Image (cartoon, rainbow, N blue to C red):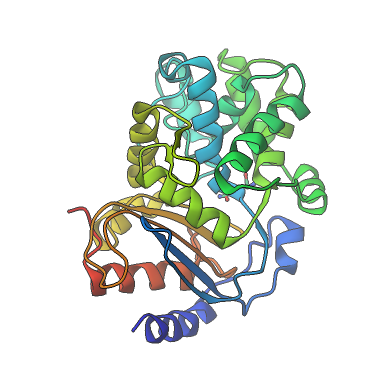
Length: 309
Ligand code: GLN
């Protein structure tokens, strides 16, 4: 059943494009597809090109928020960033000018994520990035590198992100310099992962921050709940509402074509209860979500009744 869903999803990917505004992402192979599911018993279903590594891009906003909330305290992070969806594109600037005090709306869009990246623990850009790679490594069980080619490519073309960071700095939301915040944010976007890593992360969130492989709580339940609420309401850019209706579980996408999902319901025959799910396919739609990835998740959710609603 899942294989036939994948065949249909892969055919849809022709409608998408590579994220060419970041030159290094325009080189990604367009015809790869990977899906990885892990259930609460550690049982795995894997399909396609699961060995392929891609960069987190906006999926890093999830880890970024968690590490900041855990190290600074959730309330201190929420002083600097709200938890409201915008309905605007991820790299929009408009609300920083018109909203009261220019407070970024949520940590899942660039304005919020750049703010959160500047709050991360550590005295240098590298130390702040490492706070996130260390956390990710704890969940996935192995070290994660920053893809330098993608990072340099982003850095050279980050005109909008620098503009956003300048607005944020002018309104006193950033710690440190504008360039430090942008560099930290873009390095986080360039961390390499596989669908297996993201599926493990999804299971970890499904357990509200309990790492079942170590039987150890890594983050508070409250941080996990905020994270999942943010993913559900803001995780898929300005298509978050539509996919809350059609897929119905928390997800976060990135413009490299990856999607992280976390599931706490559903009656899949061999995969019950809590589940982590990840999908990768590089062609994205005009909003920034993987075309085949979202098609796959919509069909899977419909077939197996995975929506929380
Ligand atoms: N690094 C990308 C950017 O800021 C991430 C965007 C995304 O995945 N939506 O433009």
